[in-house]
Image (cartoon, rainbow, N blue to C red; front, side, top):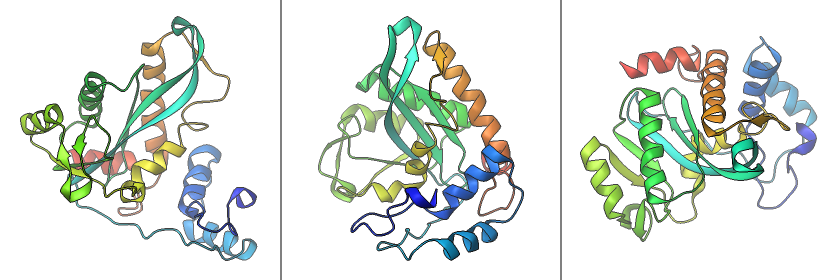
Length: 233
């Protein structure tokens, strides 16, 4: 992990040590502390040119962050190895994610992805943090964004506030960006094969729950799963 990080590359930021720690806990059964991992890395890694960002915490139910990613997956009914859009929604307090794979990123898929994500998470947070993609934002960015009409109407129906990031500021939704990194390896194993999208999404749903039971929440000290159960209330 240390050798893969861009410690001395100008403008590049290494992954937070928290990413390494969570991988050790979930994938390798590590039972030590985060501070022990942090000490280990600091003794063996150079000072990065760009420091990791400070983490911002939110109250339970206050925010979820949303993003699309793309991954190559073997799906038999789609003809084999194909690149597919993957929708992620992560509750900012508990870090509980919801993941769903689609065949496109149309307006209909965007809204259906929200339906699935909010249903899986068990409720509607006060606000959703999104990129300035066309299915969410018609023009502009951040506080000056003009919202997509369909998405604005959808948000009004469900009762959440749309909170777009500033222009070219993906770090403003860093919690969901972190989960994008987990799509290959922890959630999607290289070389895996699935019969259809239902089979693929079913496997992802089970793995998300299993991983949430292992990962600690940095705010509460309990598992992501247990923190999510409290956040749902």
